[in-house]
Length: 416
Image (cartoon, rainbow, N blue to C red):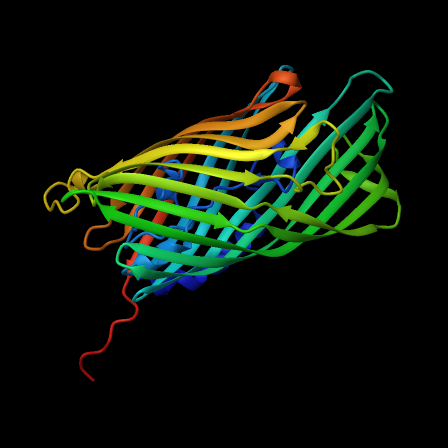
């Protein structure tokens, strides 16, 4: 089942990952944009908690999990998101549809292999500062693009209850920002166009451990560390005099020669620890904490004196419940019910205000009868930012759909 559309899905995802505008947040102007959640919908629906050594679902956060797979696993997910933006001076709304991940996990005995493609960050904003007074200075800012991550990793089961793993990430992408400055009722302005082509490699290592507490209960733990990496950014800046119409379509009148520079952008190290307790195939409750240094992500085109990059920290609680996973008569009892709460201190500081994110996640895992595959549905409701200090508060709602498909690829022939 997986082989029939794996190649076409990879090609489609690769094309869309370049074309999609994965965010509508003004905060994506800073750094390398909004950092996307790195994980499948199953984990996202539990606020990012992923501690169980699952045999049929791939865990993208910890490469040690690959060694626990028993079947070849193909995972694909996407999100439809709505966002309400509010400030002291006005409000707006936006919608986005994005593809979130594509991943494949291959079981090879005690060894497991995982590979795939994940959007790492997204840039997508349109900001206006307009005045009706003649001769007043106006600005229109916009940005698109982001960073994608191709990964390849392996996990190895050292003991039945202990696994380790590592993966390598190749990061690549393009960010384009456009700034138009003009005077009210004067159809001529100055446009600054910046393009950054980014690429670089970093590594991720992890370990997972579980132990029986009694006949029913098991304790789980997961440790993950992302090694600091460096992105090379090839920057091109073009400044031009332009004319524009009422719809702000611009035509270049005179342009300076392109200014080309090369800078290094740091991908900070990150450490995450998660622990949980539960009854296998019945229920699980767990928590996760993460810590990360975020300094060094600004580029030459988005430096600002009122902006700082502090330390990132997050706390999340989540879990799942299955009434009866092997019920033959009642489908609802085989559904996986998931939920979680999260709080993130993003590390971004603007006008001395910390930009934080908090949210509630819910999800359902719908089993496909006659297989170990399932369709996953998720809902996320949250708030990011603040209206203090002339900033923007974002209230968001995301609806996600994911597929986790399983098959056997490496059966040995018993008969010729």
